Image (cartoon, rainbow, N blue to C red; front, side, top):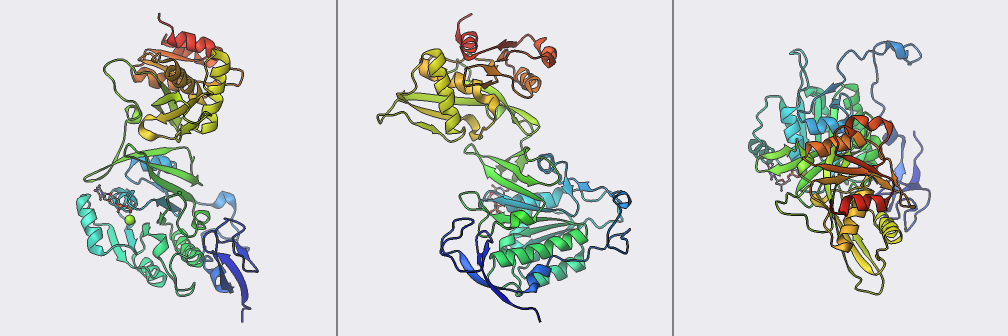
Length: 465
Ligand code: TYD
Ligand code: MG
């Protein structure tokens, strides 16, 4: 008989310790350590049947003998989701979709179930199983009606017991599984309370190994707390191949972003809006983050093309400076890092003889996108300069470039693509770092002017022609 060992485990992050502690040394949570009895059962959960053709007697397989002739990915039916995943849903992969309650996780998964193109030959089943431990069948049906989904491939299972879920999987053999949500699944073998580390570990591993063995893709929906972490056990992030977060900006745009991706990059952003009939992809996002103005630009605003994954978007940075309310200057900026704002303000103060140290500085990004790439620094400098001097940034002008502490404008990645985006959006003038050799194609557009430092850029941008 396996020897039982008593350990204490944090219900938030899964950290284990031989003794009880008031505060978890790993995640810092108070009163989160619980006694568990570790037996060999939990560890064996993931050990499924990994038989695959070409296995040698040693249980290994020659790399050159691995057959990948079957198309490894299929489309979710949404270009935005496919791009974030790195080119579609990988067969046999486990994907976590996290987001606050009400953001639209169940809606997105129902829409994917309705539009995924799993198979292009009629011999394969291409079945989809939507398992819900949160809603009733009629609630799911009402949502599907609202979304205009009546695919004959979707089966529904209202269940939270792991054993019965695995039975249903064995019978129905779906190729796409949605588990809504991972926090609701329970197994008697891992204790009785849903959502604990043990439950999530055990049930997650069992479902993932079923999917891997059957070459099915599985999506786990997970709730996140206001702070943006997976509610309860965070451990599930380590078990899956891909972690997607569904978030929204204050302008109502919803973003799907990969926080971890074994099969693609993590820089891509999928954009959606929530309409009366479900989530709608935002195909041309370039205008979303620019405010259209028919008359002149008010002071404190500058435009910059930014990079989100493989896509360039025009974004408007806004700044406001007012005399400091308390004796010292403060920065209020939740879309661009405070340290970056304060560094750029210091460079302006030094090079342009402008005082920022007695000002409260407010910075915002239209559309609510968070920006953390260096290419925005020249635009941030322009917005701050314009706010402080009350001279508006000229209409139809865009800028991009990094600023060094010495006030130099440094070359920035993807300059060609940024200029192209600005041209497409009707911008007539573009100021950035001194052109490098690779840039002659776009310099032919004649909208580009390079400058070597901040004072030269400011002169180029703000002086009247
Ligand atoms: P839901 O997908 O249930 O969110 P989650 O699973 O992340 O908790 O739905 C989120 C919200 O979207 C809900 O308040 C209603 C709204 N909604 C629409 O506006 N249009 C629709 O077509 C649907 C299905 C939902
Ligand atoms: Mg839901």
